[in-house]
Amino acid sequence: MKNFLSSLAGRFGQLAIGLRLAMGFGLLMTLLVMIMAVSLLTMGDMQRRVDTILQDQYQKVTAATEIKYNVALIHQLLRSAIIAAEYQGENAVAREIAPLRQRNAAL
Image 1 (cartoon, rainbow, N blue to C red):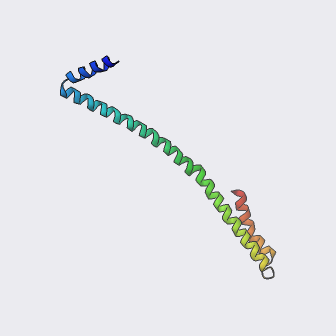
Image 2: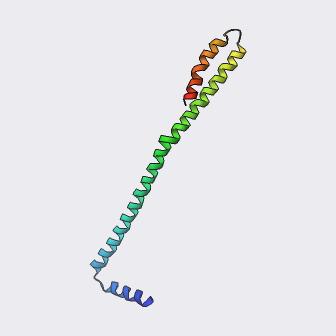
Image 3: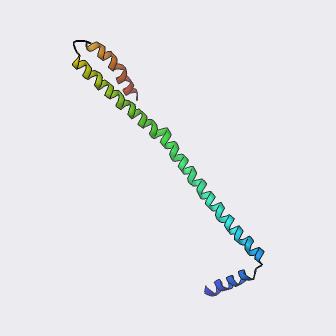
């Protein structure tokens, strides 16, 4: 193995400088193309991940946030109805709460 490497180095040293430079440049370009291919594959994978986040997970988070807001609003309306029961009446509060509950059920 050692003899093979020394003979290969000797042969490489005997080549003309232009040929050695061309071989080095070719090796450099090959490495550059390989790095570019790996980068493009990685970017494609990242694009798929971003699509998954935007199309699936983000919509779920948005729906959960809306449900949380609607539940807080229902809680606020019920608390206000209990505090001011003599001023409004149960039907007025029920009319305000019904659309919120329907929206939560739809989500």
